Image (cartoon, rainbow, N blue to C red; front, top):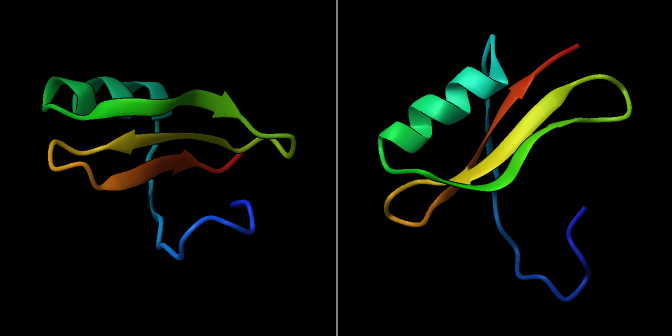
Amino acid sequence: MAPPQAPNFVQLFMAVEDVGAAVKRAESLGARTITPPTTLPEGDEMSVMLDPQGISFAVWRRK
């Protein structure tokens, strides 16, 4: 959850089969990783990245 002082924004999440592979592919195309692949408490896995234009997006895999 974003802190209360953060501006409003929309975060696009894309479901993938393999978060690590998706991150490597996105990086090879110019994306920058903000949050490396992380396993969440409920077992899902995600990573947040910036595309070459600076727009954030996330890749996500359900447990």
